[in-house]
Image 1 (spheres, rainbow, N blue to C red):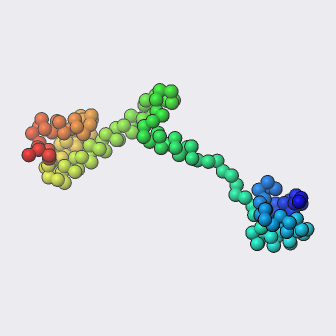
Image 2: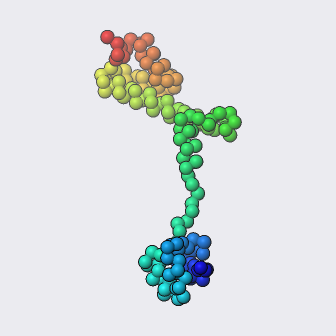
Image 3: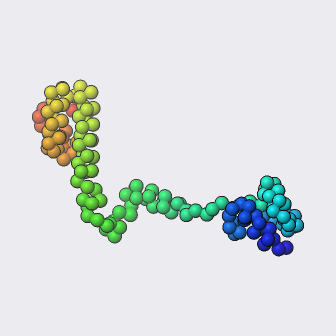
Length: 152
């Protein structure tokens, strides 16, 4: 059964390519009998002829790779382009450390571990870059005689 003309008409009506036209295989005899565009339109309304969805690029593999990278995989020497500073700029590293330190200081002030004056003192020290990390900051606090929670 040849339905090339019917497919061409359907493609014009559906505004798509001939290869995207789908004809229900159970009704090919009925479709081959359609001669006019009005017949094809009726069959489109009935659902015997449809336009297939446009095939996009699958993102499955890309999602899988990003998931792996989020776990820290695929970041070895062979995958790197750019220096360490280009991959994690100085400013971003600084923002990460200072924000975590300020968050910790704020929490300690709210708990009552730090007085307002002590908080201000350590805040200024953190801003000046005195501490490498939260652990370093807490170690300095203990040296200064500030008791940090968890010790009884």
